Image (cartoon, rainbow over all chains, first blue to last red; front, side, top):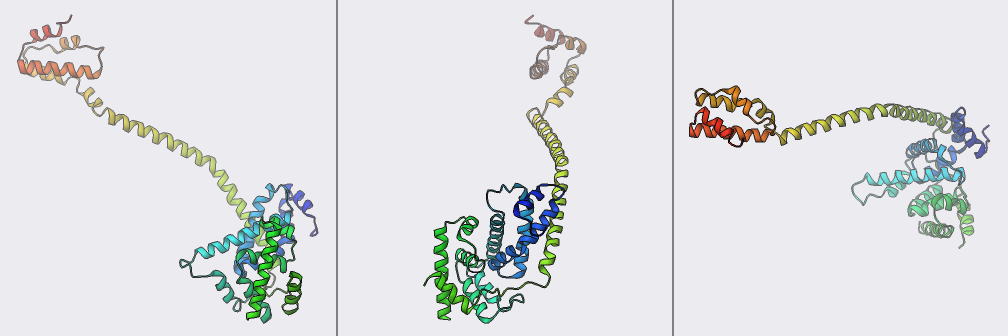
Length: 182
Length: 150
């Protein structure tokens, strides 16, 4: 039953008797993809854990209103992206001084994070990604790590495919430069 | 350099492996944690929705009582001496009785205009008092004054 299609899951969810079971299957099906998407935005595991829970809680309350105009996974990604970006915005707002750079703090915490376990060059790539502007960072992660199609990214982020390609191009250039300078 | 070139170059050097990890068993436990939060959220939603009609009724009752209180205070503010003047309805006649010997109070009551409003009655009483006290007229003269228009 873990390989249910989205259509089957949604049909089961609409039946009050199987609603809880269907949601459990949905969580099991998408939790890892959503978690890693969120984790790449907020970087730290404890933050990603908070955001994934809030995301799935919103999915639970909003799924009965899902009209199937878009694919289920793009709808889930949209909620997860918004939750993660809102989380970062709140985190920035916590600092009174504007000179405090949340991305720089995350970058400096990468090496001390107990839930980071990669090679030195992998860590360097993470730090390079954290120097990118927020939108470029999102696009780079979705394209490079998740290998997502521009069409799906466009639906999730509400940005044209041309603009997404340009963002990825700029992100790549900046990361290359970071690696060349390092 | 194209994106494909970059992917090849970086992938060769860095790889696409994710350096981020999660605690052991994290994804096994997450569904039940989410389920618990959903149940808790449902409980709080249904509790607040059950409480809502009762809250609405209390709010409505409170609103009605408050409105009535505001009207009452407003009424007292506009007519501050209304109650007092009703209590003092016989006071002018008492003053008249003290000042003028032989005044027949029931007789004055009978000639007192009943159809006019409270303010007009006050005026009549003031006229009687002023007239009797200042002029020290007797009761017969008073009656003549009263029945002048008749």
